Amino acid sequence: MIGEAIHDDTLKALVSQHVIREVVVGRVAGDNGRWTLSVRLGGPTARLIPVRSRREPLRIWKSANAVVKYADALGLRGFVVEL
Image (cartoon, rainbow, N blue to C red):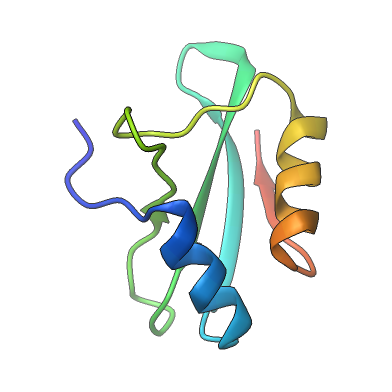
């Protein structure tokens, strides 16, 4: 279960303010075909916060290419991929 997650509009604001420390793209557990995106806002010990959709507690993309397009549209300059 996802406790805290971040909405698209909030993420866009944080990107524009340059407060995101790290971005991690990872596979959905048990499903190698779907991907998630999470951000770290604080220091190195701060936890990752996943991006959520308006209806679901976790936003899921069907391909890594789709996540790249989303990140590029937000203005993110890079991310780490965890396989």
